Structures are given as structure tokens and as C-alpha cells.
Length: 400
Image (cartoon, rainbow, N blue to C red; front, side, top):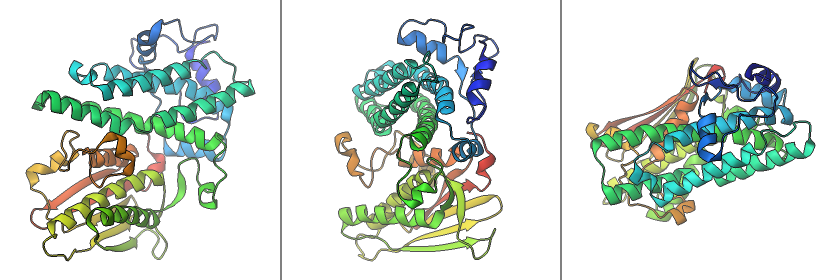
């Protein structure tokens, strides 16, 4: 069975087009003519080489919504993901192997590698199994949930590896640029893989029948995400941390303007957890800067947030009076190897420190860019900083 036939069967009601060969020279199908799966490749390196020859399938928000709300079929999702997930894992594993040897040898990066290897091997156990077998489908969903949980700490663990490397070997501009390029791709890959894992596990993992608010979701997507509620939630949680560290915290002043539908709440089709991650990180940064800049005065200016919904963009602007940063340092704030805070301990990372490895801002920008938005900083040195999140109102039509 050739690749095109497999894809027509696996994605007729599924999320998006099928797997594409990574380049014109790649003509092998993902399944053999007998339908028995990929041509034999021995060992993990061979499996990675084989699946890395294919490019991940682009998916749009509309496809996620259509599949989850109209054609939710666990068997179809199984047939798609058992091909798509190995391709996505193998592509990023191939890039991990190209990192500098000294970075690859750090305990943290080796741990991350082991997670990816284990997840790939577990997924490949399903490549020849029948989609008509109910136990196979059940076991696959169990495996997806297990993989999702295994990768929960990928971001801080990889960040710890970068810190280990930096402390042992230092950093030159070329290495820093190369690592920055890799980590942007690595973390964006993680976001996209986690989106697939979350959609399948939330739709078919038996946990989608919780509270009324979560029953309105299509997997991790809320078709009517209330932006102001998410912002207030992010503020309250960041405020608790700030109170814990500084025994005080700045107030929030929030204004919203719905230019698209005046008088109506601002709602968009979006992944609330992505928006929450962005505003939570920005609030932590703004609070820390405000508390430290005004420590001698004991009076802390409020953090101002303006939310505007237009025809094309949802814009969230967060303004603080934390003293700002010089222009030459703005780019450093998005650098994975730069942090203005003391290094946290990984084993206590679940305590959510107010500042940490320095990956909060770059990861937040990737979340914004995942559905074709962006996150930008504008600073007035000596006064404060404006952080602006742009989200496409018609993000439903964009591919990721």
C-alpha cells in the first residue's frame, strides 16, 4: 500500500493532510506495499533516520476544531497519530543529535534524549496493529497519555542542560547563536507535539467530562475563550508568588475594548493554557521588576493591562513601571542562555519560582507564534516596560 492510499484512509475524517516526504529525493512510502509498516530499520538510529525523512503534517486550528467537535473518531486519530507522532519525534531527535558533543553529554540533555527514545519506541509498537481492535485503540490512548506525562518536564530539564554546559564550558557568540536556533525549533516542536497529545488524550482519554467550562472545550481549545478571565487568572497566581517572595505585590488595572463587537466580552478561538502561560510569565516579570525597582519607596505602581479586539488582531498590552531595560539588552531577554535571576533547582521547579532559567519569555513568544501571533517588548529605560501579545483573530485559518 503506497503512502497516498494510507493517508486517504487515515485522514478522511481526521486532522489535516498526511505525511509528506521531507524532500524530492525521498520516494519511500511510510508503509510497505503489503501494508505491514515501514521497511525494517534496525535499532533506534535506523528508526530515527527513516522517520526523519518525512516532514510533519501542517495542521490548522479549523482542522483541530472540526475533528474534535464534528468527526471525533478515536480510530481515525489513532491511524493518523501512529504515523505523525514518530515523524515529529524523529525530526527533532535528529536535530538533538547535531548539538555540540559537550552539550549532548550533560546529564540533563541525556535524560531528555532518553524520554524521546522511549516515546518513539512505544509508538512504533503500534505501527502494524489493527485499527479495528478495540484493545489496540485503548492501549494507544493509554500510551499517548503516558508519553504526555513523561514529557511534562522537558522544558526545565533541557534548560538545566544548557546551564550545565554554560557553567562547565562557557559560551561563545557562535555557540550561543546555534543553541538559540536549535532551542527555538526544539521547543516549538514540543508545543506542536504536545498539542497533538493533548487533543487525543482529552478527547478520548475519558477526562473530557469534567466541569461545565471544560465540556465547552474541544480538547484543549476553547471556541469562546474569555480573554479577560484568563488574564485575571494569570495575575492572581503570579500575585500569590509575588506576595510569597516580597510580602507585597502591585495591583492590576485592566481595561478592555471590543472594537469588533462593541459592548460584548472579548472572546476568541484559542488554547487557554497557551494564553495563560504567556500572561503568567509576563506578570511574573513585571511584578519582580516593579517590586525591586521601588523597594526603597515601599509604594508599588500598578501593572496596567489593555486588551483590544479588532478585526484582525487581539492585542494584550501589559505595562509596568519596573525601571525598564536598555535597548541593547532587549534581545538578551529572549535568549535561553541569559537570565537576570539566580538559577533555580530543577527538583524544586514545580514550586514555580518567580524567576528562573530565563526561558519564560522565549517560550511565551513561541506560544504566541504557534498560531501566527507574536510577543514583543518595548522598554523605556528608567521608567518601565510594555509587553505586547498579538493573537490573530482569524487564527482558525492559519496552519501550524
